[in-house]
Image (cartoon, rainbow, N blue to C red):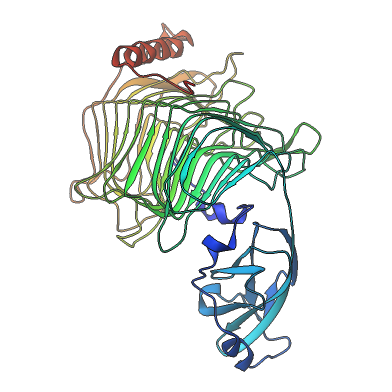
Length: 498
């Protein structure tokens, strides 16, 4: 199948959020009072919490799951921490370590209760910063601990992070706003470098990871070796701009703890991903450059819009980006990523992805589809230039067998798949046939439907990678030079300018 999605494995920001303060995060949608917790019947063997004991650092999150003979949905339970100064409930079994010490956690589900224990330890790094009030911040911050971000922002007041350098073996910039408000953050002229975590199973950090946000601007930033560029979850953004950034060699592979990587174990990273984000005023992702080099980069979808949406009058605009290298170095099994992916299986109109315009992007050197609508509605894909020759610099095929320039396939089979349009795209894609010979691969559109207004119009694929019957990788280099000349003529300045 042309689109192979994976989001039952999504990892939310809250599982790695660190160095947070109780002042911002004290509101828990699933918390309960003492009388509720103690009045329920406690029946040994009928209800349990897993894990029974957990150790975490201050600012780190833990998620508890109730079960009896079968799993019980955490949302069916009320949750209570004995000491709310040590643990803050985030609802549905999630707790954040806000203090230092130990506290029990109690879940009350259908009249029965069970408890677990959490032990919270302090952690500090003098070269990191925790921002708890609005203002303008500049500096050089670095972390030596994979569990501690270089910069943590914990306020709903406007914060500007500018003219700075950040580095570390974990997340570089973590943002966590309150559930009742939302963080308002501008990041400009910042260079971030992710380092090897040095812990088996750990992954290099994200440049920006935000949750509960109301406004985000990331402009003129440079990102080296991060697992994700910009990741935003569980937010209603009234304003969004991601523009003029430069990223290279995104790396989502899990460390073996000895300077190498675990085989075929990845965090499925993205240059940009929205997960459960609403943008009623729309937003812009434009004039960004991301380049993954052969033998270095590893990424899933370069841009992934998962159960996130603009509005009927204000779309999310993804335009004029240069995206090079959707593949996973060292992968020995099937690659499941793509260039730009519309994603998320939901029949709920308030959740389903939608109202997105993907225009005039240049996408090259892919092991998967260039642009895929695997889910969603009111999505237009127009004027994009795709040139992928299917081989790495050594001449080895990198293409997955289902690779196509464009994919229109209702992967999840939802009823929220309509009003999608693909037209006026150009270029071409080469992949091997069953005998290993180069063949053109253009469009896979099993969900094109006149009744649902899912339309594939005229697209022109002249296959610039073909020189006679041979494949010439110079066609990909020509596309980058073309895009750079357009960006220069437009006056775009890429990456950190400070």
